[in-house]
Image 1 (tube, rainbow, N blue to C red):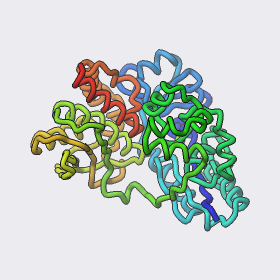
Image 2 (cartoon, rainbow, N blue to C red):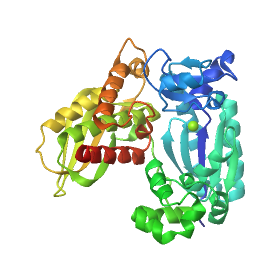
Image 3 (cartoon, helix red, strand yellow):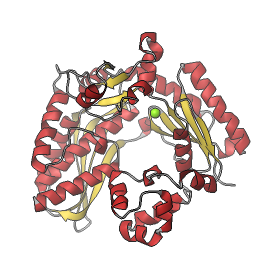
Image 4 (cartoon, rainbow, N blue to C red):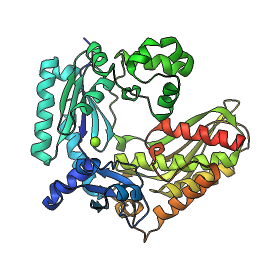
Amino acid sequence: MGQIIIHVDMDAFFASVESRDNPALRGKPLIIGSLPTERGVVSTCSYEARKFGVHSAMNIKDAYRLCPDGIYMHPNFAKYKEASDRLHEIWGSYASASETVALDEAYLDVTETAGSFDRAREMAREIKRRTAAELGLTCSVGLAYSKSAAKTASEEKKPDGYFEIPTPQDFMNLVIDRDVRVLFTVGKRTADKLYSAGIYTVSNLLDREEEVIGLLGRQGTVLLQLARGIDDRKVVPYRPEDAKSLSRELTFQRDVHDYRLLEDVLLLMSISVVERARRYGLHGNGVVLKITYSNMKSITRSKASVRCDDALSIHRAAADLLSAVKKQGVRLIGVGIYNLSGGRVRQTTLDEDFGSGSSGRESALETALAELSRRYGIDFAGDRAYAHRIEDLHGVAEEMRLRRIFG
Ligand SMILES: [Mg+2]
């Protein structure tokens, strides 16, 4: 028998927790993140705010332009982490393996615990019912034969949705006329490559197999499989608090000898690391730098007891470590945090980071990003999609590499 997988995703999680606890916020465009008077970004927003075009990772000033009458609030991570812990406990009780993707999102392997698709459907309903009854919050649930199909299913009827995709054929029928971005792994960079070759939909992709492989190489092969609904990835039991470290790595298409560029790329990677840590409600207590040189030799350097709940501090430590390594061509660079613990201890600093001008740290980060934008002629301060998707981060780093060479 194949796999039976459930993907659960809370609806506008941070905003929903806030309006659950304060009825005056219900039905209003609610934006959690920075305040419009501060510098920073949108963390999450309610569906009412999304109608105005506001979305997460958007610069708060842009959000304010679109939605001046919205209610703007700082996040309250301690509260979200507490709700999240209870949610994952409930969801995990149905699965033989559960994989935490974020505070508000998980994959559940119910192949054995359900035993049949019919019973899995009952479980999915029960998960929705208990999430609502025990936490007063709604979620969207997808039931499918694979991870990517389950994720597609949970997005299908959001909010408070339920949808199932029983077979690869059902998946194909569902997505065949949609934009290629519907496929897992297709971010902006890959999409742009495909668009420029006139490949817009999944159907275009399947009609032009050879071209896709020529264009994307091995990623193209994987993409064609995903388009046919083939995805054998397992649910990997994962609780972020058990992880030893949390990191981002990227490999350049050509080896880099320009250490200024490496230092600049590290800043974007540090933002991405912090963003991921926040998704899990975690922070670290040390920074690690990894480098693989042109000759495939890898080194790691670390710095313990560094403040690492904001991007600039992580970047400063990583840049220090970088300045001390042997200067040779670099193929891969990685930055991470280790000695992870729950967000509670430094909750206030996490909150500050999202805006409060008094701490000035988000402000300092914006200044650093503005400087980077000037140096490369790329807008880093607006939409910070690169902080969320490794693929977008990779695309931006490549663009920076090319601009350093060709100006
Ligand atoms: Mg969600």
